[in-house]
Image: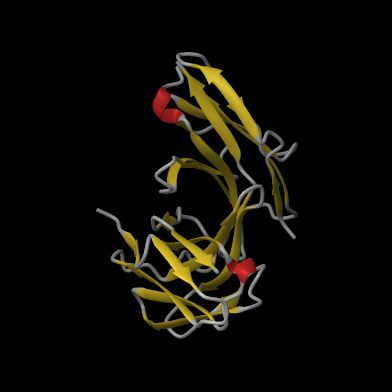
Length: 116
Length: 113
């Protein structure tokens, strides 16, 4: 069964902390993504990766960084958490079709992060 | 840049009835994919249906079907015989040459008994 697993379902962090959100997929997918979901705004892309050690900025990369040292793992890092980063974070993965997204993205269960 | 618009923030339907969710998109590309995803209260995003832009035939999956109008850049989702388990957020998404999915803001569907 296809699986994308996010390390935490709920997380509470303090302003200024460095926060790591981890995502692991077991489908040998090349592509991995981090989205942020806010009410009324839908899903917005933070970063994505086509391959190990490769990353591309999405629409809202400010305040975030990512790491992909192994194919199955994609980490999102909040360098210095702020209250406006309180949100739902969704990780996803998909097969590569030569850079064209032909197959569907599979999603993790989401991490609801609260920064206080 | 590509954009996806869902003009209905909320909708409701009676159980066993049919409902149609609207989606329009903007792109200059000719080859792309379109998707409808469902997100129930459990938060797990699930693919409902997929349409390839080069196919004229509308995709169907059991009670779910789409009306794909390429020239009008419209991609609506029809749910027939609505069930209580269809209650969820529904997101329309565009997949083009950038390699990632672009999502609309979502439609919250409530199925009432």
